[in-house]
Amino acid sequence: MFIRNELFTITIVLLLVLVIGAVTLIQAKAPSEEEKENIAQVLKKALVLAEDVYRNAKLHYKNGTPPENKAAIIENGKKALYEFFADDLAQRLSKTVVENQFESTVTGPDLIDFGVTNVELKDLSISGDKAYVTAILDKYLVERITRDGKNYIDRMEGKVTVKATLVKVDGKWKISEFTAQPDLNPEHIIQPE
Image (cartoon, rainbow, N blue to C red; front, side, top):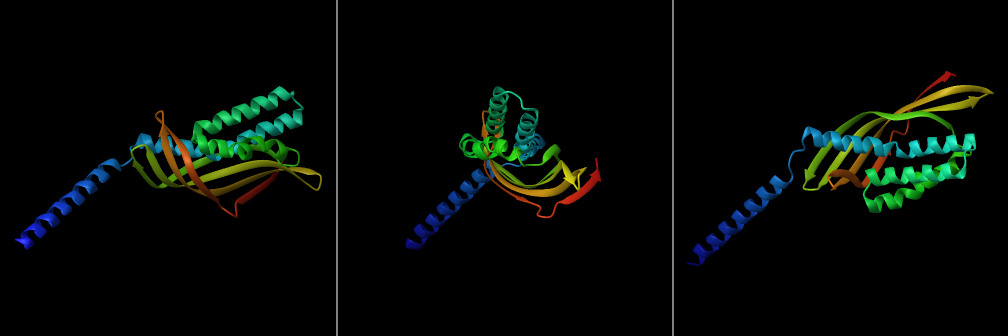
């Protein structure tokens, strides 16, 4: 009788484990192509946000535009942060990604162009309103530099590996946690201007 009860208990426990496993697998569904594209776009836009603010800040600095333009650049940068990052992370990044860009423009390079040419999602899983992703993004920056009194265009290209957790807020994916490891040896293509 004791063995029979023990066997019954083991069977019940095994069934519970199988049911819980099945429910977990159902929740962690394979991402659709649309979900993949949405997540790739969020990563792409988030990765160049600081450069976008910097370029606008540099133009403000070079052109000596009115102070209200600086306020508008900061406001637009913060709006973009909250569009691509969850609120708590956007708040933490605000100073670094938006406000400090004005200080950098005084001695920083003349940023002409920037962008991401490719996003390769290496690992992506979605469970409910959370997504976990590892992606490799091909990024470029084009700067105007001066050497020996002559202007040159310096195009830097490299890869950035991003690991991120995203959350779905009001139907849109936003980054809640991330790390970014840039290529430490980007390729430089320098040409006379």
